[in-house]
Length: 81
Image: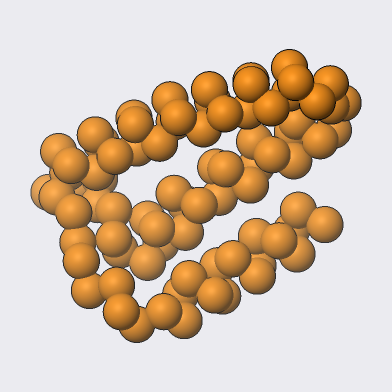
């Protein structure tokens, strides 16, 4: 299921042609750090409120990690000069 979700997201985001923006290395790191902090806080809050199991928590983690991965693949985020 996770692989299907990743493939769907990657095909959808890669098919978008309105993302000509490229962030340089500094802003990519800032955006990734902000994204990591916000998604971790959201996951911990959601898990505490809804008492979800470990498998669902791992699925959320993989889904949240795949989004920056797709943006790196698309070229919006750049980690090299």
